[in-house]
Length: 98
Length: 98
DNA sequence: TATAACTTTGACAAAGTTGTCCAAAAAGTT
DNA sequence: AACTTTTTGGACAACTTTGTCAAAGTTATA
Image (tube, rainbow over all chains, first blue to last red; front, side, top):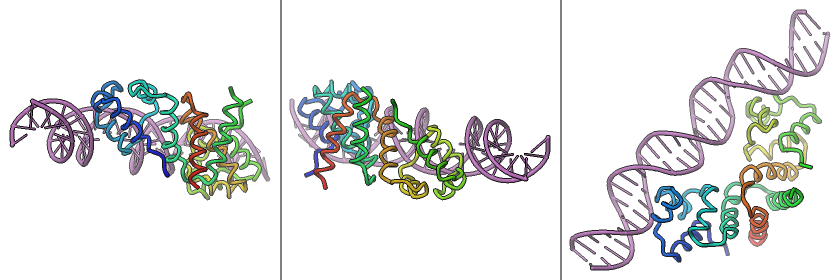
């Protein structure tokens, strides 16, 4: 079964924390409607909001990034035939680089 | 040491094949100067050109995709703290999905 | 039901991207 | 050196993306 999307994930967290869109959006300094669209998958979130969002939603920053990447990579590179191989290679490069 | 960039890679292949920018660009149906910029890393290549490009340059389509991903993922997600973890997770998801 | 708070929708502006065109620069040839 | 071919640079138009605003729709509650 397919994993919960990024949007549904952050909506769920927001509801768990009993926060209205209004408050979360204000803390991120974006418009309520923008956040609403992100939650419903109508548009991607910008990468810079991930860190603050994880704090606002009191969630693991890593988990949030991982979920973001799942959506984003699939949207951007889903067409590629050799995506898995490419990702593995990228990981190898990144590990060497440290 | 850092790996050869995507641009340098396709330039090298083009030169090995003794093809001018003009010919490769024409086959891709893009402007010569666009391809020139891609080769010099002044702009990204659009994903749709990868397959035809691999044919024109007589190279392994997989290798080309992998090199493209290295550049592209680094450019788009390089900032993320947990990039490696995220990529691993994405790979797991993709493997399950098949 | 009336009211207030929350959420969604779509038109819009600003900024960023993608690719073209053409002139200038560089490299190769005779 | 003159000529031809290849490559580069930058201004431009078309398109896409990112986020805002305000009005309309929903939901919760008194």
